[in-house]
Amino acid sequence: MAIELPKDKSAFLLKFIKPEYEDSFVEGKLYMNTLKYFIDLEKESGIRGVGDAYEASAVYSDLKASLINPDTREVLVDGKIAKLNFHSIERVNTPVFCMFAVDKDVLKVVSADKDYVYTIAHLEKTELEQLIKDFGNNMYVLDAFEFASRIKRKCEDLNILCKMNKVEYHDFSKNYESRIRKYQDLESVNVCFIKDDFFKCQNEYRILLDNVYSETPYVLDIGDISDIATKFKITDFFNGELRIALNRRNLDI
Image (cartoon, rainbow, N blue to C red; front, top):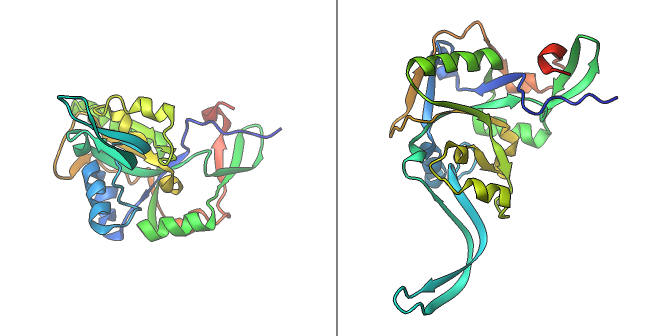
């Protein structure tokens, strides 16, 4: 009988990071850019990857539109719009901390016994190459539960509303009803967890500070995390040789 890993649990979180920022990261100083930073990054560079012009945006495709005289209701122009997007000016100033989720979408089960499920982390070659192109080959592996717990405790001390979740990926060339419903409140933090399928290889898990708005990067200091962070190369983690043992009790399977 095939073993299915739970959909809502990450075994680990990966933080891709440049070597010059390692020390401050291990000290627990979490550098959080705003969503607007990623919007501007794509607009200025013209490159999608780290940057995303549609962050926290309502995105519609292939629309019919009319320009109407408000006084006479006369239709002045009829036409089609290939793509339309808009966002809350305030919401895009939300600080965000982005990571890679090691979960069912990247873990392959290779064997199991009564106590553990043994897995390997797998990405397609093109996906792995894209990650390294966008982020470099340097990263840290984090204990997902303990890392999240420390962030929650710090946010509670600072009266910060913290939202953690995995990103949902959608085909932005289609107007799915389930996605459109989430666009009804552009002030909602839920809009910040929707991205285009183009970014799917990033398998992103993100942490947002819901009631913090800033025009500059925000640093959340949660204290030393060297006990729960292990340095790795992306290529070594996804080479198919590293066995990841998952405790059945923690997975509830």
